[in-house]
Every structure is written in C-alpha cells, then in structure tokens.
Amino acid sequence: MRSPPLRLLFCHGLGAAKTDAQLMGQWARQKQIEFQIIQYQNYGDPSNVWAVNQWVRDIGVELARDQNAAVAANNPSRGTVAACASAGAQALLRALWHSPLLAQHLAGLLLLSPGVCMEVPNYVQRVLPDQWDALRAGLPVDHPSADRTIQLRINMDSLKDYERNCVIRRDSPLAPLHFPIRIVHGLYDKLVPIENCVELLQRLPAHDKAMHVVPCGHVITDTTTMLFALDSLWAQICRRREEENAAERQNAKVPEAILR
Image (cartoon, rainbow, N blue to C red):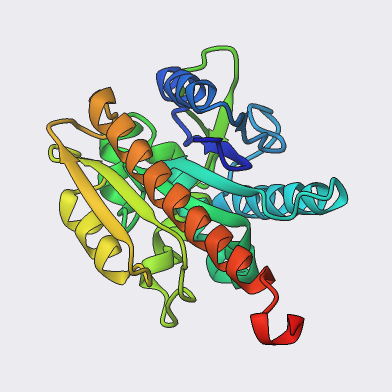
C-alpha cells in the first residue's frame, strides 16, 4: 500500500534522549515518510532560562508552518504524526489547548512518558537534588541533559508554571481531538506516576485512544512497545485515509439519472 502523505515530528523533552529520536527516524524511513525533530528556539542557550511556554509557541509555529507549506505545494491532505516525550508532550497538549485549530494539522499523536500533573518538590528531589537552595533563592540552575554539548537553564518560576498550569489541571478541557492517540508510559516512573497518565488518558477528548504500560521508569527502554504504538497509529491513519478516499470516489461519480 502506498504511504499516505505524512511526516513524523518528534518533540523531545528536557532530557532529549537520543535513542528515542533514532528509533523514530528509523520507523519513518521504513514507512517512507518524512522525519523531523522539532527545533526549539534558544534550546541549549545558557543565557536562556527555559519555560514550557517557549516550546508551546515553537510547536504551534511549526505545525502551522508545515501546513501552509503543504497547501502551497498543492498537497493539503498531508498531515503530521507527532511523537512527544515528557515535557514535549506537555508543550504540545498546551499548544492544542491554547489554539484548538492546530489539531487539524495532526493525523496522529504518540505520547511517551507525558509530563503531566508533575509536582515541583518531587521533580527537584529526583532531578535536581543539590539545587534546592539556589532554586528557592530564585537563581537559574543547570538541568541535566543526555546531550552534553548543550547547557539548559531552569528556575523555580518555570517549574512552578509547569506544575500550576498543567493542561489537565485547567478548568476548561481540550477541544475534541479527531485523530488516534497512543500513550506509552512506564509502570515504575517516579517523575510522572502511572496514576497521572491514567488521568490524562481519561481526560483526553478523543474516541480513538489507548495506553500501553511498560516495565520501565521515566525513560522508556521498551522499543518493541514504542514501535507497536506507532504501527497502531499508522494502521488507523491508513484506514481513515482509505475511507476518505473511497467516499471521495463515490461522491465524484455522476448519478446515472443525470447521464440520461
């Protein structure tokens, strides 16, 4: 079967695990679709103090830009499958909450260890245990990353905003999402307990959604399940495209009565 006009957009988290990006890229090449890693502005700039809303903006801009390019290339049916990890998942969901029309650019969504309902004390204790005093004093501190060539800075304000304005803590819900969603989450995740992800699954306003629980922590090492989730999205997207194409062919037929 011919591959539908899609691209896979990977939105990594603060840890930016390289193995996730490599796996996504391999899968996209196998399916013969474009693969892209989100380019966050000021990512790794030591003069920039990270805030999730920076990523919300960047993801929104990228989704709109790609759709405009697809229309200009006379390929408006092209869609994006977004694969988002940790804080990248929170950022994309916030982008959809702020701008519901962005959802029309998505054909599917994979959430890996989505960073929802996180609590600052637990996060600092597990990720930045030696930085409590500096954070309380309002100072920016270095955040660990798998990419040792960059420097990430974070402060207490950005952590509190992340916690307080989590997308599933909002009074108003997300607008309906008309694309398949798959979540892969670690049973032993200490940063984002499994209960948080169950609540996210329940709150996502989508009919086609599922969660795969794996025996991992926050870093998903079960590549088999990740690929299974991607394949599940792919199957649903292809099925929907076939149904849409069949409907278009049916509508394009001239009724026999008109020909007489």
